[in-house]
Structures are given as C-alpha cells and as structure tokens.
Image 1 (cartoon, rainbow, N blue to C red):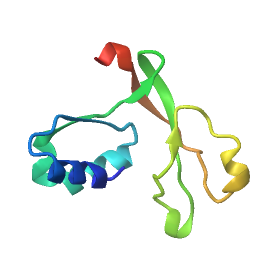
Image 2: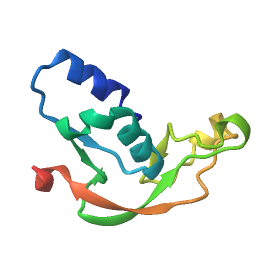
Image 3: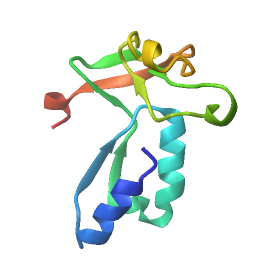
Image 4: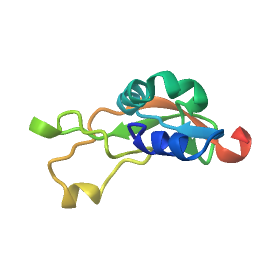
Length: 106
C-alpha cells in the first residue's frame, strides 16, 4: 500500500471520508510520502485490524536483491504455504504492531 488507490479516491470524490489501515512501517512511510499535502484529507491508522485489541507480531515480507524492501505482503499470522510458492520471500523479522477490532474502532 503506497497510497496509489487513496490518491485515485481523492481525485474521484470531492469530499471523501477515507480511513486507511496499515501496520507495515515501510508501507506507512511510502504512503505518507506519496500523499504529501493530501495526507490531511485522509485518516491513516497505523494499526492492524484483528479479532482483538492489543499488540501482535506482524510478519512483514522481505527478500534479497531487487526485492530487498518488498513490502507487498505481510500478515499478523506467520506465513506457511506462501513460502512453498515464493521461496525467495522471507518473513524473518516480525515487528510488534497495535491491533484493533473493527467493531471497537467504529
């Protein structure tokens, strides 16, 4: 999530009410950079949606070479089968992130 879809929504909707959820610190940085001055038109919540409130290990993806900063996949569940299809992607550096139940957030 680098904010591309959010930018499109801002272009299409004159007065949007956008809430964006993102737990990956790398994607958050790219999102903020891409949105720039438009960031004040959206509410970016740096959390993961879960079945409980608190904190949890988020497993961001990473790899070698050109995909070193690969942040296109990540999960609050430790990936398993993903690695059989894409053995070049690793999830070896979990980070602690805040979680919130959607019902409680609303």
